[in-house]
Amino acid sequence: MPTFNTTTRRITLAGHNGDEIEAYVAQPSDPGQYPGVVVIHHLPGWDSWTREVVRRFADSGYIAIAPHLFSRWLPATEQELRAKAFQTWGPPDPQVMGDIAASARWVKQQPTSNGKVGAIGFCSGGRQAYLVASQVDDVDAAVDCWGGAVIPDERFSVNEDRPISPFGATKDIHMPLLGIFGNDDQFPTPEQVNQIEEELKRHGKEYEFYRYDGAGHGFWAWHMPSYRVEQTQDSWGKVMAFFEKHLT
Figure 1: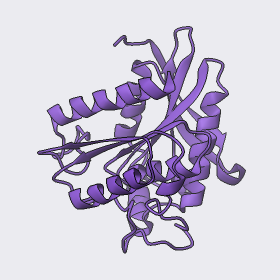
Figure 2: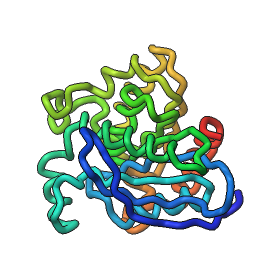
Figure 3: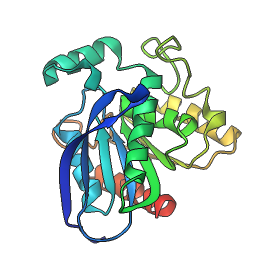
Figure 4: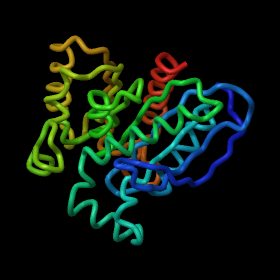
């Protein structure tokens, strides 16, 4: 796979309800038409690991953008944002869906866009990516990386902030979906992944699921003890093949 010359920048864009939010963008600087990807950060926040994922997509020929889903909580330190995220389990779903849709539209408006955009999310962002697949028309393919609470639980029950169950909305999924999971994970558990897969099959959805032995939650996080080199390399290849199939 070729490596592209890239540029990076921080931008502001109009998110849900026109609210101004931050985003981190990396994209090829070489002439051409490129697919896009919205990187949905995990619950710890819009951190250096998230931005490194964005740059890696750009290196592979994508216009990549990571919206800062906690922008409305600023000003605050990264530690304060993280604490609030774990207290609230993140911003309301409708707001997040609006921010992701706005980010996808921003990519499609770029002169070097090929008109297609995927979304990939990790942890809580994986849950949000699963929800994107049924709720956001501006996205063309979605990747759920170990998204917990796709099936609602006491932390992510259906309420005013989370009015739609991702699992309950499986019937409304209208794009290809990829799932990446560790068999040692407990959020989601392997049993929950089985249940989600059965629901996708029941509704005849286009999907691919890959499960990795010896890997738990967040096994792509190379700065954490959870990191697993072989499983990360293989599953990154699965993600790239999926996006190449559906976005190029």
